[in-house]
Image (cartoon, rainbow, N blue to C red; front, side, top):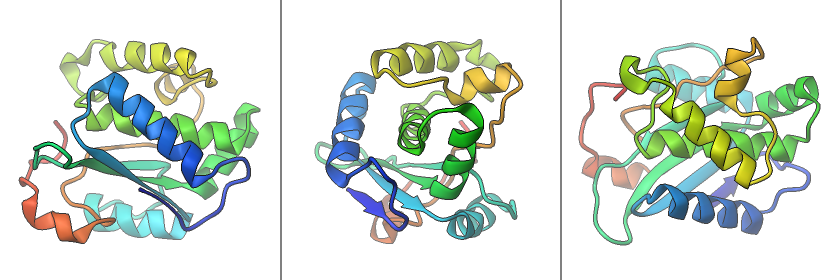
Length: 176
């Protein structure tokens, strides 16, 4: 399910649903990934509520650990306002930036974590391969290595998008 609280030129619910399904198959995610495209004020609220950081961020991932066929693999919240700013700065479309953020968030849902000491660049390499196969411009990890903006921190403990699933989540200690 894709929810647009902020519209993005060049993106539709159908196109994002197809992207999420394709990336989910590639990453072998078990279950559906829901996506919320929202404003910087809502992202700031979510970041404050779930990460205790009082600022907007570009993408947040909410992994679901309930398992089972047809279940929810996780949820993503993407900030349309920051995507617009980063797209302008990097010289590509806002639609492409949203797709890059979704790809990055889905890698986190699949268990990748570039902030983990034992990652050894694994997430970055995977993101680069997927980004190239999806014909997307520079990804989040690559731009941080190049000194370009990267504001995302991913893994959170609960879901703002589907509160009904919250009772099925396993509490986590934060990042994997």
